[in-house]
Length: 234
Image (cartoon, rainbow, N blue to C red):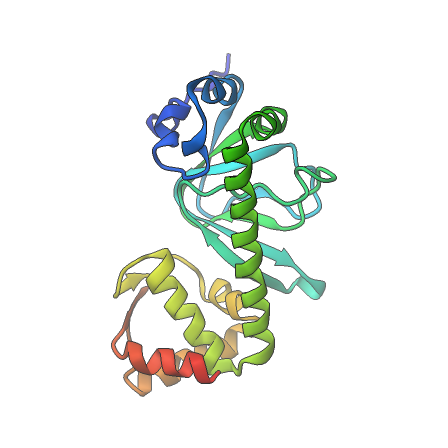
């Protein structure tokens, strides 16, 4: 008989309560409600967590690892919207609307995801105004980030877009410099809405100008001020 066990990273909602600003406002009774029938799924690097257009049945919370959120476009072209880290909720906007996924999520590294009942989630929204406010705040932050992303990729030249991607990875995702890039070159290109060849060419130009150094999958931004200037100029 197959047994499903929770890993040490997802034993109970009280532990996640300490990690997530969203669930941090729930009381013990509400956490118990959420905890009743949630379950955890493990994904290997490269495995799809859910696909654009598929049914959206649960609210998802990344408990370990890292995931990429992509919009699938025409002709197999994707736009990598953002990268999710542990403690971040990434159930699609259709979960509470028409129960469809409007983007795809894929594990970038070995990851675990907590699946939370949509109905239990809705119950907490109705009973806890602070939770509802935090949830709306999260939605608004994601929307603002997406608006900025679309402005950048439609109005900036190629060097500005590549600069934006490197700054985002260093300051917001890996929070390090140098950092080990766990994304493929195609993923990096998808972040900027460029072809892989164009992205690699701009990256080489930054290296030749000693703005960055590269050693395998490690990238170091050696001239952050110059890179941010390129980002500003576009």
